[in-house]
Structure formats: C-alpha cells, structure tokens
Length: 223
Image (cartoon, rainbow, N blue to C red; front, side):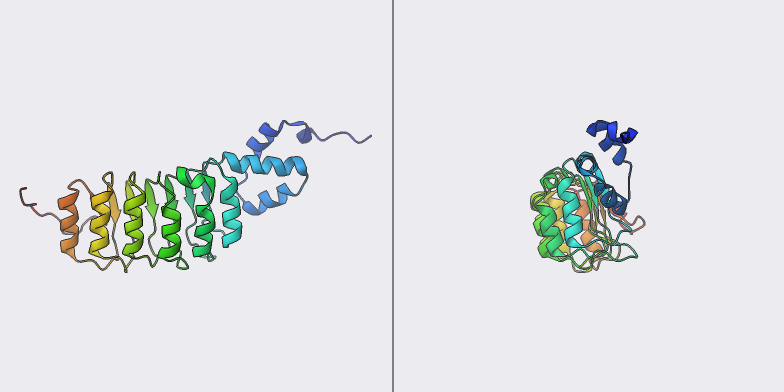
C-alpha cells in the first residue's frame, strides 16, 4: 500500500499558509493542478492575500480579474506596466471592479497602463471607496477620472499623475476641493500652469506638490 506523502497530511489551513509564500502566478497555477486539496489550498492562499502585484508579469484582462476575484482580503493592488507589456484594458478594469475586495482596497497602481481610458478608471474608482493611495501616472486619463476620484474617494491621501498630460487645472481644483485628506500629489510632466499649483496651495496649504523644487515659495494672500 502506497504511503501518504507528509505534505498531504497537512490541514488545509496550514497548506494555504505555505502556499501564500509562492509569488509566481505561474507556479500557483501549476500547484493548483496537482490535486483537489492543493487547488483548494491555492484558493484559500489567494483569499488571505493583502497585496497583489502584477508588475513584471504579462497579464491580460481575464487572468488578472480572475486572481483579484479570489483575493477577498486584498488591500493593495499593483498592475503597473512592465517591460513585458501589460495588456490590461477598460474591460479588465470593469471585471476587477466587480470583485468583492474592491471596496476595501487602500492602494491601487495603474502606472503606465496605456490601454485604459476614463471609462475603465471611472468604473473601478466608483467602487473603491476606501482608496487612500492611487498611482495613475503615465496614462491618458482626463478630468473625467479626477472628478470620479473626487466624488468616490473621500479618504484619498496621495495621487500620482506623472505625465498625465490630459488633466487640466479644473480637474486638479475639484480633486483638491473634495478630497479633504489629500496630502500629496505628483504632477511631474503635466501641462498645467504654475498658477494652478499656487491655487492648489490656497485650497490645501499643507499639500505636498511633487516633484519638489517647483518654484512655489510664495506668500499666500490673507483670507
């Protein structure tokens, strides 16, 4: 009679704890195909994850959304573009927006994802009501996305708009006015005039405008 392998004697909770240490999604997929118990272990491992990063992975809409849907405890999601080329589109953001974890996300990075537009960003952001940190730099979003962020993310503390050349001063003013907990904003590479940044400081005197070194050392008028 064939003796049971030692790892097969592990309780499912302990197996899931071990599988959480696997960072490669390819390895997780292969592990899931070993047997039913390991497949369940992989599902529980994903369900316990607080962070997911697809940076450096060649992901598409369906595979990314499928993993996010299983990550019920997720707090931080990073699907930044990498040299391998991320294929996430508005459809992928829509699928992700339907995941149960989205309302609990505190950090999202969509850095450099050029295949997304306001449509996908708005669909995702309107459900991410706990969001505190948002990196959407290097994308083609406009003021439409900034308006959705301002209306849906009251806890927002920092936002990266690096090289978002389609946002205007109007969108930034709405963001600064409605996001009362906003502490930091990165506007490197945008096309908004210097006067806009001075106006933002009038609304939020403690706001950190990056990159540091912008000539904003002005005396604000007394109110």
